[in-house]
Length: 140
Image 1 (cartoon, rainbow, N blue to C red):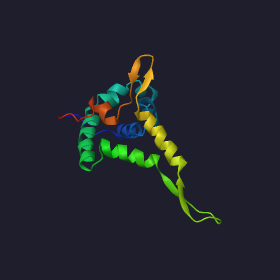
Image 2: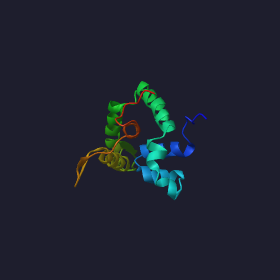
Image 3: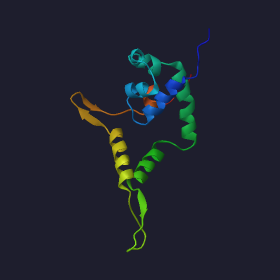
Image 4: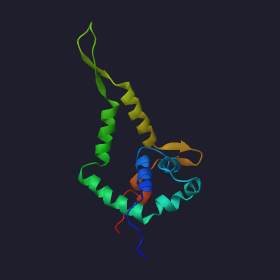
């Protein structure tokens, strides 16, 4: 019997949530996995040939579209400098800082930066690094 090479809807939902900053456990829970399945995250997500195959297909397409590290860094910079229009009856219209967007961008940036804990320096991995063990797609 040939194994399924496409991820389930729950696996895709988990990957989407993880790419938004959710932990694997929380993402799986939000995607609808049962409590017993949450304990098997490594098998269901990390070691899944279907998930690995999916990431190996999507990652190169993102690079072709120009969605790479420099693009992501520029996008975060753009968000950190976000402006919005401000209208007043007493003053001419002007652009002001959009603090809501800037704070969200800052929070996202903090998630990407290395953090220090008792065990030493660690950083959060991107979904590609998490799945492919280093960020580059595996050739399969």
